[in-house]
Image (cartoon, rainbow, N blue to C red; front, side):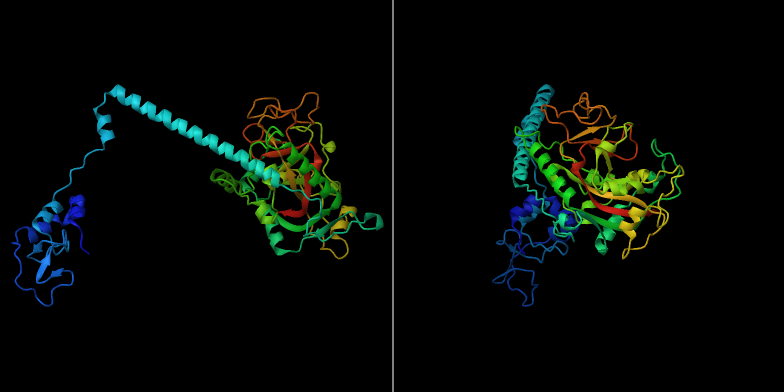
Length: 453
């Protein structure tokens, strides 16, 4: 393909490179005379104009030789000189002016450039924040809450007065959900072995194995949960109508940014929402969390969470405690000093076993522990490490005279925080905890019986 002489001139030494000595030895000493006649079987790479070979650079001047055997170029004398002569590269006008400035003037120019760059970044940040507010408004306006029962539920009756039960537990048979629940039970075995302040018992197990699972289909609780979620949504409208949803929370059991994914891999957690096929409402920080429970309390939790049963000695207030890692929930599934199961065989808990392992159900697997996987509305959450002050504002996290039963108001508002996220790094070393002080904002989606392995 012919290459213009101008292009070759711009390429300069880059085009010749290591080939230049061969080019010089084969081409420079040759006389460039017009050929009186061209051989009939001339190379296809040559250009024939009548009986003359023409320059591959300017495509006009006649060339008397076959060109460089390495480069494959036939060049006339002017094009050849352009080919082997390096181009003179001149700095841009702005750079020449900068180089002629004094050191003080150069520093002033650099400072002006940094200031302009900071202003551009601030402007971009403001534009992104404005766009986020617009998206929050759009998300809130499009958010809908339906108290109708989920379509995948097996119980759709609404006649408890006629003898129909208000709630049921449905054994999970779908293989995809069972695999998802097993994935949700995964935890970091090294973190599991570490003894903590509230977990002093040594462990002889490194993980959890799914034994059985049930879906909780509770009509009244579902209606209450949807009403509570709608109330939180109304309170988290963008200002001035509400307090805003606050920071978008990222749990370690969900897919998120690269840094959060690294933390999730460290904890050996999967994305629970994806594993269980449970879509969540991000605009109200709805999350999937777990809650470990003693066998004697399983029936109570299936009737709804209640912060009134919380112990007065609880470290982070009298609320409902949830976790993002089953390694944390497992600490609360046994009440024996040796940490062993309280549900070893069928008949240990007659009422519970009649419900879960009764006629037509799967047999009791033996030596099981129980954990609930729950939907929870976190809304505008407060964050703390010491259990006393909020990380972002430095203010006290609990309302005055609340006896640790209600969170303080969001800064600049009269509405309280909707939940408390206790970060690691302070009192907690291994697992984060979530505390919700209104039980209707939690719905027990699945009950899981598991064994320690």
